[in-house]
Image (tube, rainbow, N blue to C red):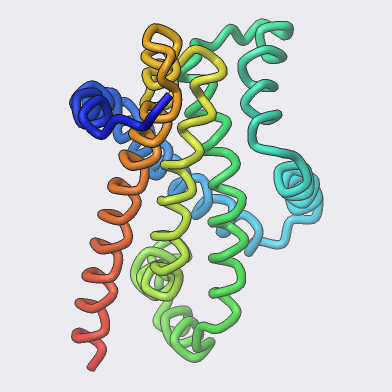
Length: 219
């Protein structure tokens, strides 16, 4: 069966519409992951032993297991203890937790590089701890980890394709449905790949522009 560019072009509109699902889920996941990663970073900085031990175990589990298994745990295992989540909610929660861990690790590494003098000066001015974080620490942290956050955003977008295995109708599942009906998997999967490539190239380009603006402000 020969590759047909005309067929590929014809199915791209359907895949583009399905991509809106991936974009919506990715946006929710990234926001939740930023909140979760920031919260974990602050919690770990408090150096409460039981809390840090629990976070350390969670980090080890998330980093040591495949994302697909984590999605299955949220979708198939949590209902056994009374948490019956929809495919979308389970998928978003699983990927957001996974991304939160990696963002927290990145922010923790960047936190060590900050000038302690600024934090000491803010503390000497009797600023409340939450204001020290909000006004002094976090703005600098986010600037330093921006390239990693952009990369994490592309990973999240690609990760949403895994949600097709728990019946979320996204780009990949739409491509699979079209391939099953047309018996042309080559063009449909190439189309799905092109959609994800276009999304991630756009994210990377926007990330570079934001980095450029921050560089100009620092100059």
